Image 1 (cartoon, rainbow, N blue to C red):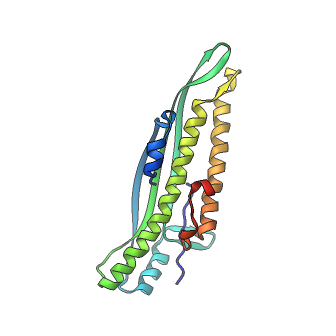
Image 2 (cartoon, rainbow, N blue to C red; image 1 turned 30 degrees about the vertical axis):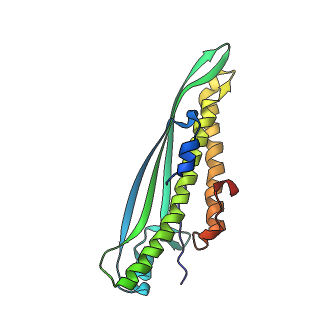
Image 3 (cartoon, rainbow, N blue to C red; image 1 turned 60 degrees about the vertical axis):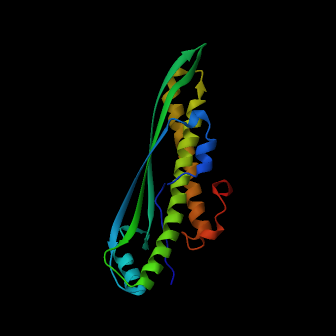
Amino acid sequence: MRITFRRTIIAAVSAFFLLTAAPCLADVVKTETVKYYMVTGKGKKEIVRSMKRNSPIKQKGRTFQGNTSSQIKYKFTWIRKNGVCTINKVTVRIHITYLYPKLAQQTSKAIRQWWDTYMERLTEHELVHGEIALESAHVLDRALNTLKTPNCDNVEKRVKNKFDSIMQKYKKKQKDYDKLTEHGIHQERFKGIQHL
């Protein structure tokens, strides 16, 4: 039985990343929401059919069971010093939303164990999507905190271009991750974000 997983662009960050984050990354503000859609059934086949029927995550004729989406916003101020415009204060905010199936009824112990294992794998896959999204927010924060331009008239354009460039790069990482793991079916292939 092959169940596919899906994310829309764009978690949990590893303890290592939190402990080694540079000071300029401290202004990234992360919030999360976890949502569920209900599925029914007492056996595996019934539950899988229910997920395919009830999942709101559909794209290009395919139905996916899990989803991670993120929204990144930024604010900044700038100052002119010695003829150069420098970003003065940056705040980057990221909100990550996870969507998972949830069993609506009690099942046998064997089915519950199968379901728990399935959800662990699905959650593991989706949390990496969240980590990728969070990393993009930190990269944006670092890039904006070091941005300088001689022309103060184009600061906003420069910031927008930098944002678009970083988001495009991380959109590709999200796609590469799904391609590598086949949407979580082969999660064991994932060896870290740095390898994407």
